[in-house]
Image 1: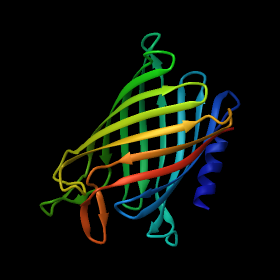
Image 2 (image 1 turned 135 degrees about the vertical axis):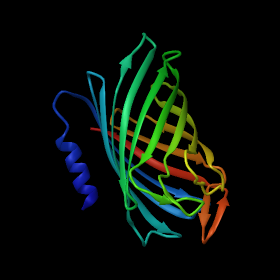
Image 3 (image 1 turned 90 degrees about the vertical axis):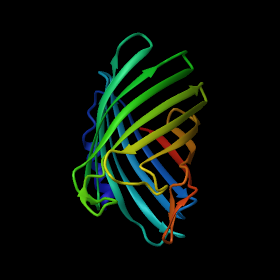
Length: 232
């Protein structure tokens, strides 16, 4: 019901002046943590440069699909401002909430279209927690983090390929599952444009030693995803 309510609300917000509305359905598996996941996302682009999305992400369980529950939800919006013919700036915001609490994630992204088929970009984002957690010293503090994303992509009339290295670091006394204050990962997406409507894709995300399973941390983590984008 939560998934249906989120998608219906997103659909209700789509005016007739929109340029494109996309429904994205994705499933995934974390190899090190033995976790299954799924995501339902609806996004919309406007001709004036605004973009909005709503999504719900679900945990399907560990070692199986019998413990499905909502993991978190997100609303994201940004505006694309052209600095030059081939360079654009996108300031934006993500509002993220789940069972632990909520985060506000402001960011700014710069994209350079190097050729009609290739592009690169960089995004600076700050994930500010609205709630406190217990840090490494046993004190209550906010597990906020800074994050930098890099983007390198290529596409033609049938294929879309993008790699996305990500670097992030806690600003306070917290560690990731790799037992360090900072971590990184790299996401590779390969999408096939079956038609203007149907675009299936696969993802491989190498996350370093961020796996956690049965009380053990620091496990090598690979995340595999399969999804489809449906342009309505």
